[in-house]
Length: 307
Image (cartoon, rainbow, N blue to C red; front, side, top):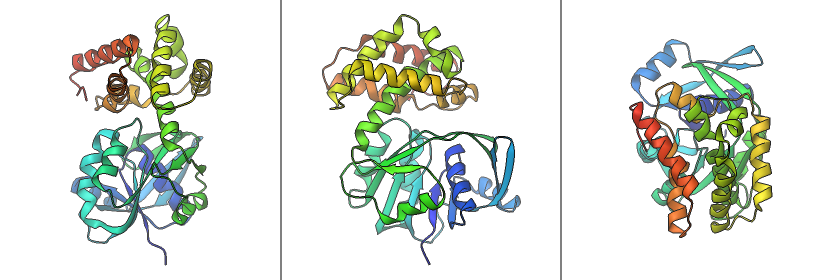
């Protein structure tokens, strides 16, 4: 009997992956943050509702807390980027020398902190483009089917346990240069998310709201990508960003959703990480820096954390 998959984080992405696994009959355990959340989950008889295109699918998913005693072999971390450090520290006593972690976070920075925390373990990074949001604590809506790219920044082949994702019909593929993928995704997020948060708009309205700032921002982001060894022309980056905007025109970015709900955003792992790395590379990125400060001020005015 194979070891269960453990999914850390009861947000929309954690629930989506738990639901996909449950649909496929894969033994998975959802790790929740508080005793109250676990009590409420169990009071609903471990029921998770997956909604897609208006159709609801009730599923059974067992949940537990980080301090349960069973060892964890395969851990999928689906928390927000800012919550990763605390979440993996809570779970650390249950990890073994053979444990492997798969990180699904937006932005960059949180992944490297986990790799540094567990240098002896295999830590995989992923880029996920599915769209999902929660109607309630145990009801999530799968709003857009995406693709998941997974890789190991230390190199090597895909581990066999990832085949369970195929069984769950999660569209994934192994990516040898996962850091380049994550840098491009970071640039796309830097070009879209701040404007959706500042102007409370869907992704499709970003070019209009960004106006003349947009090409200057893309030039800064192109410089940054080049400094990180990402071989992409300005025209290719621009087209990639415009394609995402068009494909997700009606979507609400995660940053806009967090802001609307009064939740902490992932600004530090998106714009913050970009600006810090631009400084370290000796780059001049005035438009990117100004956008970061504008968004920080916007968050401060709403009493939200700036990191």
